[in-house]
Length: 256
Image (cartoon, one colour):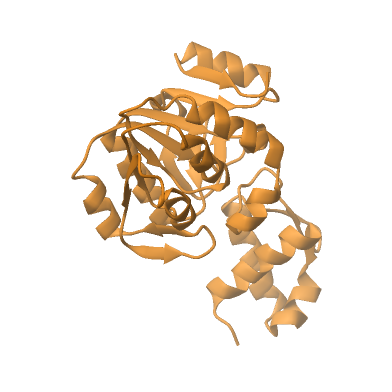
């Protein structure tokens, strides 16, 4: 027997793979009653992961799920590369910046070659590895617990370390970007660290391909109006573009 949290996690994985699930099938699969499975599906619907249907549930495609970084990196790779290049162009010699973990921020790291006298703080193990041999970068890596799916570090130690410094720019990875729901991510620990990053940076720059718009996840990082810039691609919906301009947020379209 597995516990409730693990069972629901496995149901989410199955929803992502198959797009829908059936109560009877899940009841047999996990050796629990149909009442228990319906309770699971109600909770997943409450959190936005699923939409219940007769006899089961369907995947809510607007929900931002916690997928492994290597899987995220395969999605919209060319678009993410263009966004990463445009974001890296915002970094000036002498800047002190934070690179958040994520598939798009990861692609920023190679673009820093040729820039001088940078201070870069990151919570991403793969970004730290990429930048470790760059002699023009004073590289700082936060300490903490490892999120294996994201190759990132988080926790109270990381938050305390960040609060000792002030940075010019934060490049914030995005899982969900919704005008009403704000900027969200699936993991509570990472969300808390991201909130601290926002506190210690003079400029908050969100980077997101257009697949992230209209999506929400469990944990709020920041309201949309609290960022300074967004770097995205040309598929951004027109009503998003207008709303962001109305809020005074600078929108950079990377693939024009």
